[in-house]
Length: 66
Image (cartoon, rainbow, N blue to C red):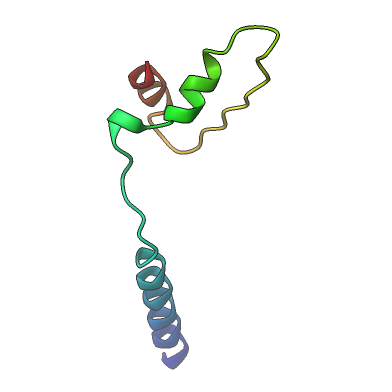
């Protein structure tokens, strides 16, 4: 029982510390602004850009970018 309580406290503290890093939701106005500008560069000055998504609602997020 004491180990479960310690684990619970440890988990809560780790979650609390992770929230202190100033993470915020990206604004639609400037979400991936630099990458979108880079994708408009024409050949031969362009380069390969790999976008990797994880989680859910990926298709919805891609449609909302452009």
